[in-house]
Length: 271
Image (tube, rainbow, N blue to C red):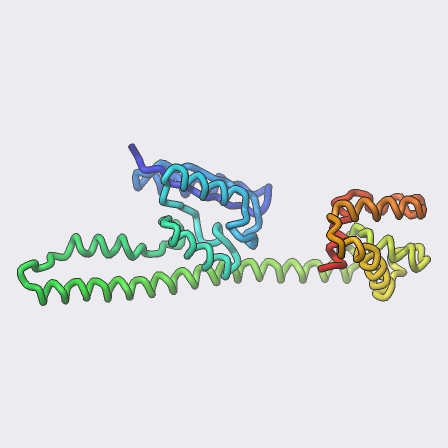
């Protein structure tokens, strides 16, 4: 029976096609006689792999079924954050997993050493030659280990650099649209509070001082509840009830009322 390997596929956006990765991984497994078992996840590469739902499920499944090999298209599938990449990769190795990046091949030192020892005829009748041969194999493998570490570091740095470049280009595009007045911004609860407290009628009239006063008002409202460990969900409900009593939502019917969006605004003032 063919050895089962776990194939991890990660895409960042729902409109991306995971089949592109699946085709490459299937071909790689087929050529080596492996049976692929796919785990597909839609999540940003900046998220720590150990906190991703599907990645965690895959690790648990592998442990339960004694699957030791995990295959991915490249190091960016594991992470686009260099620190996460190094940390999780080393953790996987410590846990006994053999991790393969199809487009970023990293030599497996244990496997190379085993193959070298198979190919090299060690003279059993000569203790000195036997010791020297083993020492040379160890030195060679150590050099390969360094090369593998360098290759992995370069691939990881490239993955993070790509992400940083995307973030930078996105910021430039948003700044340009904002400067041209073309960027649509859905007002937050803090924006509506700034209108309410300042008495102004248009978001365009708001100043940084108006926004800061609204943030301080919200922070002052939630602080006593946070100090006695009231859950944020309950605080959001209390805030909504207070604003309803004050006629806030009568004045601003489009202001956020969902608990989720109110909690988002609370997080902005306490972070």
